[in-house]
Structures are given as structure tokens and as C-alpha cells.
Length: 264
Image 1 (spheres, rainbow, N blue to C red):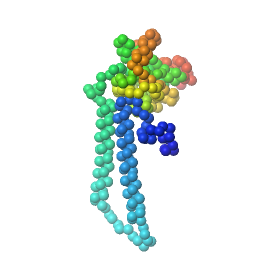
Image 2: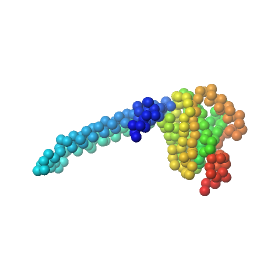
Image 3: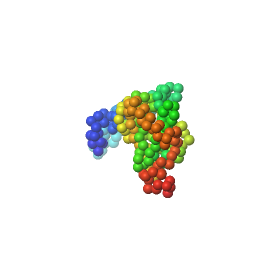
Image 4: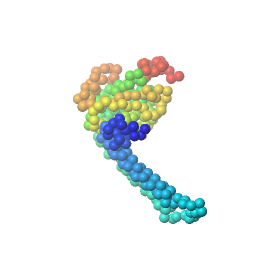
């Protein structure tokens, strides 16, 4: 089954099952993922090699044979105490290095070219394009029946601020190799730089209630001119003007079994 799962994409096997990265930061995470797998394979080969060596080398050769009774072996005990610690330290070091590149602190973060306020609510998403329309914010929301689409300009640093008015959600775009929880009362944010155009699926990755599985959206990475055209289109509609931090779109429009805001 594991081998067959790599047949859908000729290069997916090289990425050990990960999607092709679609942001600048995703390449760092893919490298960490691949090297972690290589380290795991090497450790696994060594461990299984030692196991089979011990099974064959010290096997019982006759019914009368009694193996040497070793109470302890200090060199081996030192080795299997230090070796795991060294492996953990190495993995931790490389993980922190990648984390600093993907999630730098505010002082080292790149200057954002655009800001998106992502609102996750039961059970859909609202995307606010902050100060995008001549200094004014515009937004668009969706429903489980009509998932929203988030537009992003290619090769631009995009800052995402995450907000929830109800419960914990999780903003996840698999093609970006990244997700982050949307926690009520907590200011979670990150910056990504899309480097491939296309349409990518997004979803909520945190069990958030009855219709969690329908909390979907799409991301379109487009040219800067197409992005600006989309912003102008939103700005021309009074319903999309201003900031929206939690709407009832998901309950008053088709998409849920109840359409009057009830959550029973």
C-alpha cells in the first residue's frame, strides 16, 4: 500500500509522499522532511542489522549449550544512552533552524507586501484583504455549500493574521506544506511567499464541530495584475467593503441542514 501510494506522481516518491512545494518557505520544510526520513532509514538499517547479527551470531547451536551470562556491559550501556541523545539534539537543531526560516520573529520577518486577516468560524472562512483597496479593507466569505476562494499574488510576501470568534480551527493548505491553528483570543500569524501559480485546496485541520469536514476553501495564486483586479472587483461591491471578523454567512445561506443559525 505504501509503495502504491507513490504511483500517482512520478516525483512524489522523491518527496516521501509530500506535495510539491508551492511557497518559498515550503522548500525548507521539504528538505527537513527528506533528511529526517534519510536519518530514520539509516537508524532503522543499523538497528535491524544489529538485531539480525545478534540473532545469527549468538544463536543456540546445541541443546546443551548455555550462553555466557553477562550482567552488564558498560561500553554498550554508555553507547545506547548517548546515541539517542545525540540523535535528538541533531534533529532538534535542524528543526529549529528551519523553524527560524519559516517562522522568524517580527524583527527578522520580511516586510509584507500584503496582509490577509483570516477568520475561521463555524463552519467556513472569511478572508479580509487588509488595506488592499486604496488603503481600505475588503473581504469575502463563504459557506460550506459555496467555499470561498483566497487570492494571493505570486512572489509577494503575504502576512496572514488568524482570528476565530468561536472555537479552535486550523488554517491548512497542503501545497504550502504548512498549517497553523486559529485560536480564539490568541494572535497567531505567519508570512509566506507563494512561488507557483495555480489553484490549491485548503481546509480546516482541527476538529471544530459537526460540519468540520465541510470547512473548505481554495487558494488561487495569480499574477499581481490579476490579484489587483480581484481586489478592485471586491471593492466595487458594497457588501464586500470593510473588515469582517466573524459572519453568519455559513448559517444563513445553503450549506448546512439548518439555515436559521441554529446549531442543534
